Image (cartoon, rainbow, N blue to C red; front, side, top):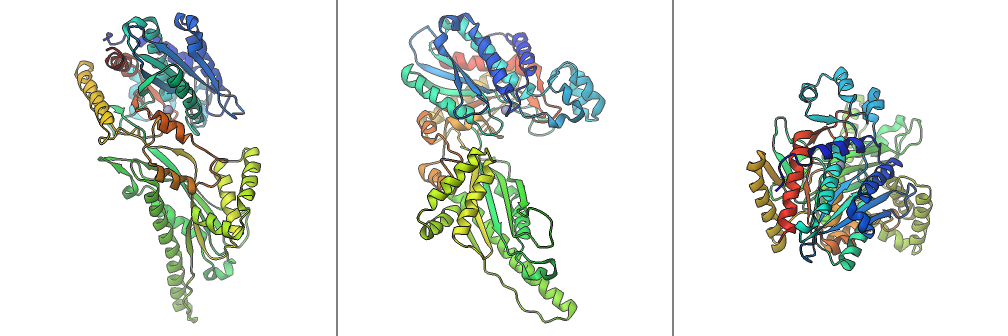
Length: 551
Ligand SMILES: [Zn+2]
């Protein structure tokens, strides 16, 4: 066990350096910061003598040529092949939220004073006053975590004789949206497992956690990652002139009703062994009219962030169907009731205006279209190709494919189509019914129980890192049937988007998170707590290395 604070100065200095290199997701900065990390590692004596164990991997089909950096350090005490992966991402979100302070987003020295002049938030002001927090884009999410792992990798490389097992340090880009970095890195992890005979025990990700509620002082650890899908609804109504409002079927009202039924609905939060996801949130909700006129919208398109802890895909699709059916029924009922009321008021004759409607999952729509046009796959492929070439938004491509099938089927009646679009993040955690997973979970819990009092921290081991992480791609808990349901309802799967399911299943690496402690990630007041993140966290991770890599 190293004394607390052993890595403090070096990790803090490195974090400052990394924050100064902007690496906003979708920019060349992602590569700049990854290059810096690579060069820093390459200068270590260990990699001077083992250059083949430090790898730069360019992402496939990436116009920005972004890179993964992977480094293998072997313990030499014995020929044990047990290996821990130390994992972080190098991209950050943008800086739009900094508003007038945009020019200071990476200036960790000046930023606190500038923030002080603009905020009334007592917690932010108190944190600035304490001197225990570092501000700046990426300071908390998650350059501090990258720096901590770099320091540990360096120490390990200088003390290989102490360890039986090995570590793999891994830095990935593109984490904040598409996760393509980790997906490609799985190839190297698999290659090393075969060639270097590595036995991956687990991965430790240092992405940040925050207090769960005001005054929360727990320090959180996670034994898995939340899953996420993007369920989409394409709603075809019946457009009408404003002068004949009651003759239409309002796609807008159907969309509103779907949002009402889904958004923040606590009962839609998925649960696994007492731990809940956050409920769904609409990420897009719009009609598809190109411009103003006095006709009601013919169609609407909306999609949601939908977190998953345990639900199989078939169950989720069933839930989405019920939501869509209720929404369409609501439109019929509301239109009819209001027409009746209106006729009462005007004295005009009332006639019930009942519409029939249908709700179709994408796989059903596809089957219907295929029966009409056996060559429909070619048309879908060409359309997807053409849009991917244009680098169109993936969700919009999915919508175009759905619309094409609706045209093939000549759909004229009000219809709700349910489908899935990118990204998909698999859910995973340690399952108690899998003996090895149960044993590892209990052992990590014991490690934290032992460390807590020594660290004077109240540590909590949760089952899922709650807000999306690259750790999703190291293990998948969906069974084959659930995966197939997902693929069948994913327009353009294999072209618009694909996942390395086989690699994920082959690796099946327990994915833990030993996070940095910070607040306001993705906000302009993003900040990392120095005493815990640089003083204690490295020692906790180091204690895990000692526990699992020394026999
Ligand atoms: Zn992050």
